[in-house]
Length: 477
Image: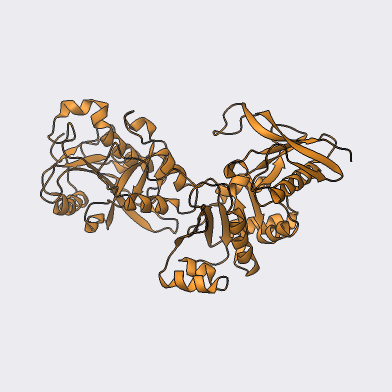
């Protein structure tokens, strides 16, 4: 690591701001992977700016080493609304980190010591390599090779530098203000939760903060979440809402007043052993719903309404269990969604664990038709003559399959819905082997079986044997 190799007014201002909070003892680890990095970025070359690292020694203000990128803010990024912003990234290292505290370059040749530097630099290179952006709440999931095998992380979140003075986050420079945000290593479970709801990055960052996680690396920390809830119901809302009080106004007046007075956007309703979490915020990108939109079996007019809802919804209310259970609160979540539909607040409803996306009008029509709320039947992708449910596994049950070559796809789906609805109505939240129901003049029984599921996408890369409940006819029509 060498002394500062070059210092533009932008970099000088940035370093002046950093030394105010981190101390004035630092060295610059120069990026040697980009041509011209020793003399500064060559804009005319079309190459990304080099990403140097300022390595700050422990100081009176901060009793541990801190790494900060230098170079990312050379090129501004843009928000979705088109506003420019500049960003640099930070990570703290525990006191005594080998090779850094004290400086011993030979120790940084070993990956168990050097991977935080690679992680920070590789993350900062992303915008220059693919034209994307990095911002508060964003996640990076392709960082597995940056980590040493000894740590539990596979990706990272961009968030506030917890544990550092808040004033550090905003650096004035001649080119404009520069945000200083942290790269927070994240586990598989945390990354999965982040993408399970709109603005999920804020949810995970909040959990990290509540768990006392800071921007100082803890290679042995445990995940702050077990991952996303096993099932979720999203209501795509017509109007924007900053808190739950605005969502519930005119629906549940007393609760709206209580939650609105405190500006609460996330709330756990303590009902029984499976409390229901309510969360409002964010929007879905149309691409997030594209696959389930293809499965929507609706008249063309309703499909047009659904496409418009996906494009125009203002925010999303997400209902999910606070912890895994038997799905007993599905009915409560469905009733809440129905209230929002009846008061004109909902445009569409999406249950991703059921692969079910529908308009507000069709949602209430399905309930009136007594279709099951615990699952949704679809054509079986692995077979041309069967239908199967989606959603029961998320409730701790087993999916149900119905093969009937003599029936149309719509008839197979209808029979399967009727079977599940009857079984659930009579016994529990999910159907079980041995249950019987009479559908369209035929008695069917659920029997435990197994089917080969064809590989579909990265989650199921190849054929697997899956346990299902087979819907078997046992009596005449």
